[in-house]
Image (tube, rainbow, N blue to C red; front, side):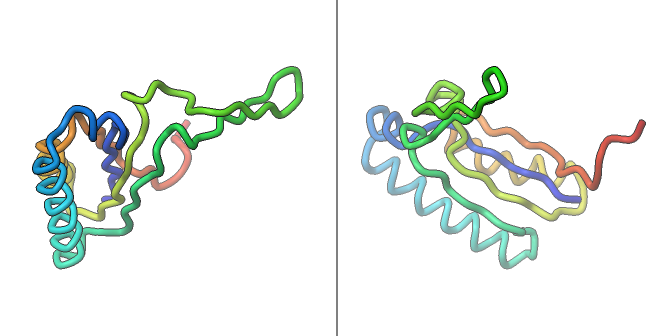
Length: 119
């Protein structure tokens, strides 16, 4: 089963609210976490995202594409990075999410759909 594990927040807020030692430890954890996912064969892909201040929001207004600077969500709700995991079951996905949430205020875990919803 594939799951997307999402971590929220932004680098600017993290640097303002956390100590340099905490940031160093968190980065070391991320490297170890990814290496362990690779070792166990559970990692499909993982990426960190640029600061939300560099985001563009693209919307459709009166049939026209409109581009505005900034993220759709507030910074505290912005997606900071994600992992796609291939794990045996939901229990294992939750176990992995539990390792990450120690370093984030919250994470979201969502199963990757195999196709469109059944009707």
